[in-house]
Image 1 (cartoon, rainbow, N blue to C red):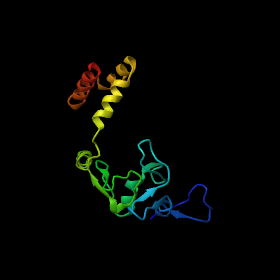
Image 2: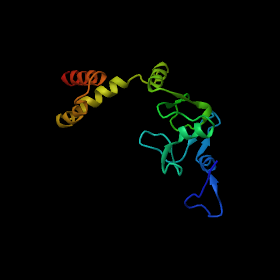
Image 3: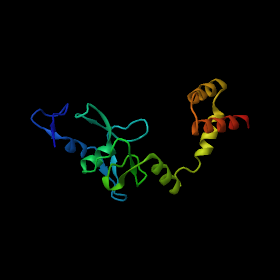
Image 4: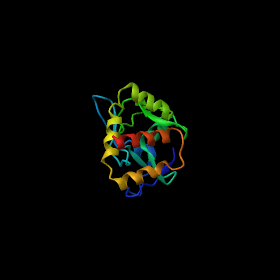
Length: 156
């Protein structure tokens, strides 16, 4: 493991990325989730400054890497515990977006989403709805189906 100087650390103290990482979570004794207490992104996932790439990385992906299971860029890290803040590698697996959605459906996590989307679409002003519709220009397939559904919801 590479040693890095960490900003704000005592210059005599060198820490590995793993050392830094393991100070950023607390373990929930009931669920065994390692709950991230560091920074989070807009979606609620933990982020960690990685000096190797000079950028933030998602903490759960880094956890898998530190555990000896790097995840290829084309795959996602799936939380078996359904806790976005969890970085316990025993609760994480690699998978596709489609697998993630399927697992969420099987566990009942997507119930009520249609009603939430319908309420959101109906709450938009005419101008906001026109702006929202612009996201679909030039798109085909599922995006077109989503737009048609939104137009039907607005017409009701």
